[in-house]
Amino acid sequence: MRVDAEPFTDVRVRKAIAMAIDNSLIKPLVYPEGGDVGENYHVAPVHPDYEALPPISRDVEGAKALLAEAGHADGLTVTIDVGNTDGPWHQTVAEAMRDQLQDAGITLNINVIPASKYWEIWTKTPFGATAWTHRPLGTMVMSLGYRTGVPWNESGFSSAEFDAALDEAEATLDVEARKPLLAKASKILQDSGVVVLPIWRPVYCMASNSVHGYPAHPTQYHQFNKVWMG
Image (cartoon, rainbow, N blue to C red):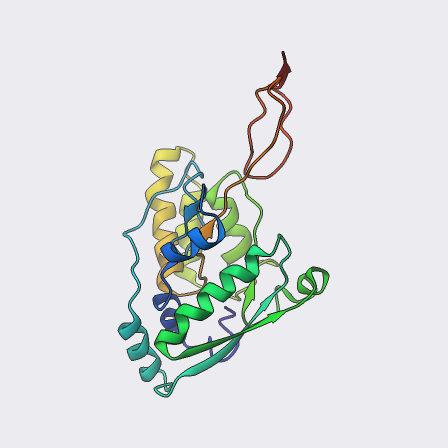
């Protein structure tokens, strides 16, 4: 959600949307096997510098209260742009979000557009469904997508506190020492209601029984350095 576009300029609206969604109910609809449930911040369990935050839970009444405080006691209608750039599961996720948001008085209209058109607007749309490619470190994704003023900051999020926490995490080489520092930045992002990140999708690969050492990789790159035949 772009924090500089109405109605998402109000953090209460953003938090209400996130609060009205149970991420754990979405993943089974999209990927029943594999993957992980997302926690509304952009560091995944597969990242070496990941540290889990306290679990989030759906709170429909809390979402309604936040909307009322923000001046939307009678409900709210928003639109999400979906390009299915990585497959039709994007639309499935949006539809699952729509169904849950209704309980909080939020109407989510889904605008499906061609993938090529989505990439023309992905950093401009007030609300869009974007799939990000894996990066080796959580700090890399957070810096690419949420640091103040960076080109791929599709939400327009800007927080001096977040930037400072990320600076400290990036400056820490020891992975174990970096985890709580990155978790601090993750909590700021989560509390700001910038992103609803319901799932971490699984990645699969197919190979003959005679091919060994060919694992699926989060980037979907082909890693042949340890492959052997026999």
